[in-house]
Length: 238
Image 1 (cartoon, rainbow, N blue to C red):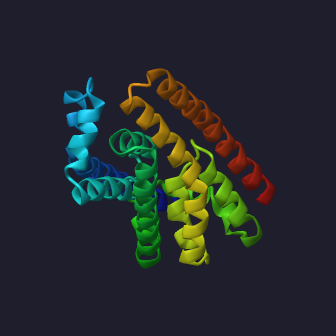
Image 2 (cartoon, rainbow, N blue to C red; image 1 turned 135 degrees about the vertical axis):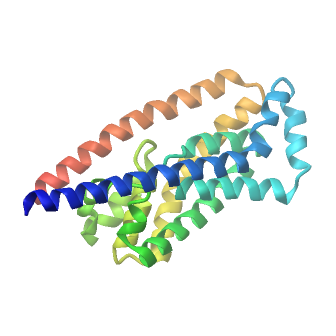
């Protein structure tokens, strides 16, 4: 009986892995198509960033929609790096405009993920994450800890924001409250990334390099900090 159950579990696990692989590939393809209108001309205008920014501005609202759409997709398809999108937006639109566009995209993306998880449950989530990663977040079910810990996780680069976005659909938190927490916490990282992109666009390569090094360093610390946080709370609950 045990062997039979293990076979069923292994088959389900293989199906989930295949589903994640397919969704990831499709997501990346769509992401690259959406981003191409902004990313590819970067090569052509690399030595003349002002011309590149004028070219992007010529698209008007379409350029904004591409940026917002790419940010939304990045949140839904978790393997796409959000920092790269924010830096690219900073290069194309400048710090202020990129921050606004990326923030709008992140709000829409978080809301869509929240609704989809509520509607389709764990089977939907398994298309993006192994079930073990979701189970590691069970300590966020505690309402007293949840909001503060979620805010901290979203505030620090390197922590799995997209995974948390999916997990929140399993809690009883209100969507409006979750969007407020995630948006406010995400804005500082978006601003810093956009500043790095803008500096790159203006040819301020030293400033851009410093910003990027700081982001990478904090991300490494954030990744380690997240692992420590999960291990601490899971051992405490055991």
